[in-house]
Image 1 (cartoon, rainbow, N blue to C red):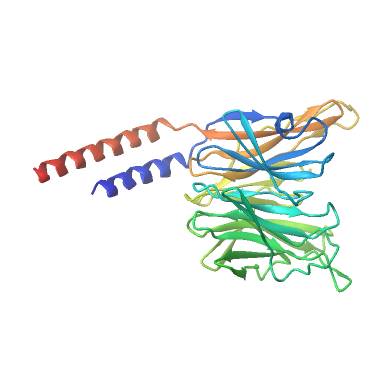
Image 2 (image 1 turned 90 degrees about the vertical axis):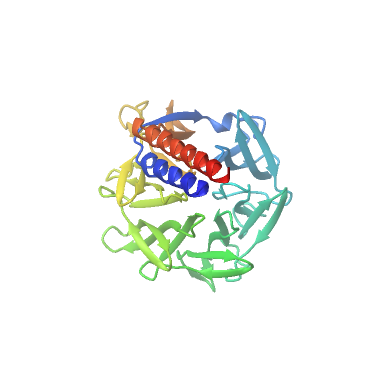
Length: 356
């Protein structure tokens, strides 16, 4: 009974907090983390956030050819170098509780095939999809993008040049207990998976070539029990909609392009698209060509914290700040939590009386 009451409380809180429209915003200029990447000597990007609020990402130091993972929490950044990688080109993903991380590396910058890896307990392990031609000089092979607490991994594979033929197709897959399973959307020319939650729900993006615009157009998707559900932000234009992360509550985050090809971030939950309060700054340094800047989101944890990035103007160029949105509970949510805790107290007292 105590357990049932506890989970009832969590369910009540989750169902109400998932509708939160107010957030606090913390901003981090990650390239300024000079303890990992000396100023002007490389790149650093954050694409995953754990339930504890720890930020996970990748870094590259061009001067030394050193690359790896990093973690950032409570003002402290920790570098986790990969001993044989020269470049980390893609996003990384983490599960929310046990600390496992997956990502992508290249052993030769810009020309080598990409390899997936899993990082756990200080050890990097390469995981390559067997469908990849390892002899090609194409800069794409296997990438790993998401992992859940059961160790189920999602990723993508493809070769830009196979037998001399150019292809833009990307294939999504799951990897579990040594088995690769392709999960392509049959209606799309390419499928890219980004995240998997503890319920096995996978989210990502599909693309198809448009004969009207003569470019690739993108839609988000949720994949559950073998079924693809396509997601398109109602006012999306430009390249379309990208879905990048989800959590165990079924909250989904992503971004879309407007008709001017500027990106805006949103959450999708229970059939509702909700814009997120991230700024679109304008760089007006060149008055003849003022430029509206982009924002993006990459991940959401089970507490509703959302990891993203905002471009901000800096003279004639732009910089990118990493941001974390933390939901502020509505008064009704707090009341439901107190009610749930009160219910648990009643059950505990009744159990003690029964034991007496």
